[in-house]
Length: 115
Image (tube, rainbow, N blue to C red):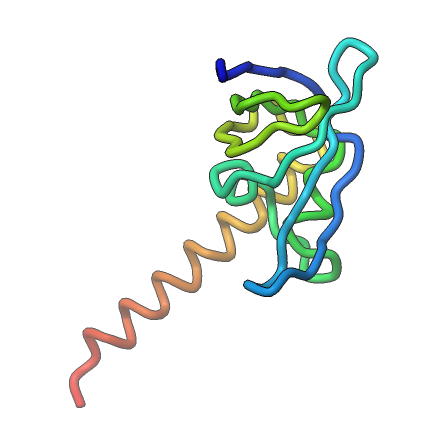
């Protein structure tokens, strides 16, 4: 089967349980059609982490580009990336990056401190 690329806006995200653990899913609205797929790792990591809701819920509203094998309206074995964040997501991501930098700096200082 041929691989298809879809570019659209994430309209819903949810978590389902399987025998192997949690599975993160999303629906993408593209040209009036809703597609469903598992959230690729690259897309999940590009989303800012909100302490109250986590990364999955924060993806809503982001523009993504996903490539996968299309079966009906489901993309199988998806790969993708975030094309654009909403302004709120960008601000949250900037805060997360700032906190990570402070944490890493403190950790490095702790590691180089003599015993």
